[in-house]
Every structure is written in structure tokens, then in C-alpha cells.
Image (cartoon, rainbow, N blue to C red; front, side):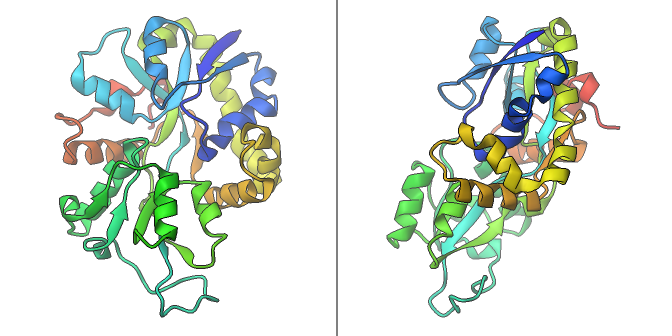
Amino acid sequence: MNIKLAENFRAVFYAPFYATHALGLFAEQGVSITLLDSPSPGAGIAELAKGNIDVMWGGPLRVIKERDEFQRTEGSLVAFCEVAAKDPFFLLRCRPAASNKSSSQGSPFSLKDLPGLRFASVSEVPTPWLCLQQDLREVGVDPAQLNRVADRSMQENLDALLRGELDVIQVFEPYVSLALANANLEVMHAASQRGYTAYTTFISTFEGMQRNHAGFEAMIAAIEQFRPWLAEHGPAELARVVKSFYPQVSLEILTACLTRYHAAELWTCRRAISRQGFARLADSMLDSGYIERAARYEDCVAASAYEG
């Protein structure tokens, strides 16, 4: 069995997909995977519609958004097999001048402190800002009141933070570990602390689920072997296994990235998609105005991936 799989984009928190591939776990289940690049996040959706690929990985956000805009058909998107079950983004800041730089923490921070600060959110993909908006609303902060930069890349925002032009930025790895090489910067908030948020799954179509049933079942079985492997070998070995997929990131930095994500229990790598995590994502999208109608789990998740 061969499955044509499109990468969403090359992110560090996608390491379980690459490790499963590199360790030969897919092959052990009798399925060969052809990895295909996507020119931009979410571009694989068009390739699914054309029949050029069988499956992609990415955020269930895209499934929820499609279901909000279009009536469900056999060609509609559907999510299955949860891999990243928590939000992989962080807020970084420069250490307050009065803090002890030998300490791992500066002054206490609350999301209530964001209004009035010069803040930059992620522009490359929509999910992290949508989810952060929900976090802010829950502590009584109106996201519209933030002094927010919304149109620059994470690298540009990191550079601006180092120049003192911003107070807080929203980034994922490897920008966090790269930034922490500077003693004046610190993590002030980890989005993973909110708990389950459906962040990364496989995505196909209802028709594709039927056509590739055996191949997808083999993929799920392979992915479910990742967590036992990680528990035995640890994030340092994971970094070594996937290093070739991240040629621009040093092994030292990659190890720090994956150690941080492992400690956050970011990855579940299981067949079922968390109902709690799906609801959190869907509510964030609805309350932010990104979708117009409440999303139903059963409309967006494959029956084989139902939790409970």
C-alpha cells in the first residue's frame, strides 16, 4: 500500500510524523508513505480536492472552517488520528530590568497584563491567535483592545523584540529555544498549559477514508507506536532521529525544542481525537468570529476517530 501524504509545513512540533517515517514504523505496518511538500500551510487541501494526494496533516481548524462554509459531501474534509493535542505556542518577553538575570523567571505575568504592552501575534497561521483570544476572554480581556502587530513573521517579531520595539511576541519552536540563548529573554506563558486543544491530526475526505481504509489503518497503528518509543528513548534520541528533516536547526537547539514539547505532553499520537480538545478549538473559532455556527464533533471527525 502506498499513501501520498502532504506535509502542512516543516514545523518542529510535527516531529512525531517524521520520526514514525524515519524509524520505519509505517513500513512495519505494510504501508509506504510518499511525503510531498506543500507550498504553504493548508495548501494540501486543494490537492486533496483534486485527488493528487490521499491525506495531509494539519489543524482540524481547516475541517471546521470548511464545514461552516459548505454543506457536507463525500468530498468534504474529515479529521482522524490525533497527534498534537495541545497548543505548541509560547509568549516571550525581555526580562524586566529589575529581575535577577540568574533566575529562570522574571516578575510574575498574567494574560491580564497584555493590554498596553506592544504585542505581536503569529501571522503565518490562524490557529494560535484564535486560541489566545479565547484565553484572553476567559480572564476578562477584550482581544480587540491589545496593541497588536498582526502582519509580521515570527522571525521578524523576534528581531523586533531583541531591538526593544516589542514587549511580547507569540512564537513556536525553534524560535523559543533560539531566543532563550539570549539571557535577556524569557518564556512568560506556554499555551499548552490551557490543556487539550485539537491542534494536529491527519486530514482526508470522507471518500478518501473509504478508498484508503487499509492504508490509513496502517498509518494509525504506526503513529500509535511513537509514544511508547519516545517513553523508552527520550527527546534527545528523537532529535537525532529527525535531525535530517530540520537541516537549518542545530542538534543542540532541536534537542531543547523537543525536550520542551515532551515536557508539555504535547503529543498523544492516538486514534481518537479528544472531544474536549475539539470543543476548545471550535469555541475559540466561533467566539472570535472565524466561523458563524457552532461546530459539531461528529460532522468533522471520522467515526473511527470518535472518543468515547
